Image 1 (cartoon, one colour):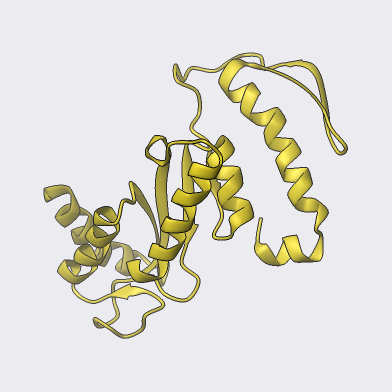
Image 2 (cartoon, rainbow, N blue to C red):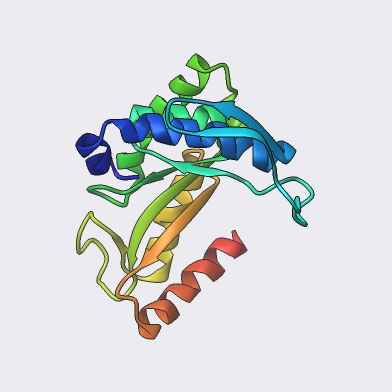
Length: 180
């Protein structure tokens, strides 16, 4: 859900929260019982439960407080995404905000994975733009390591352009990160 969509339809936040009141128990326990303003689940059973022994991890994204609060309440992973810059300094205030929201909600932030969605342009020279990570593989890997050092547990990389050449140029980044 985009923040733009939420501004156009304020009820979308309440609907999403109610949806999570149904989805989370289904994923965790295989059963939901909920009556809300927008949704109802009367003794709903998930059949079959599925092959994952520890349930499907639930990722909830949100840069703003409402999304962070939903993630603190329900998620296994909170996701934040680049809006102006794909460098870690844009994400740090959101990380602090998320930690504070977790404490308000009574949730240990260490129990939730933290994901950063960033743009990567491996064919562009280093420093071409703050909107995306670029340059040689070592420079991109160093930028991604900064996310790990800041407490992020994973990253979603949007490789652009979406060409085979760009994906091949990004492959050494992955190898550098695997090596340490």
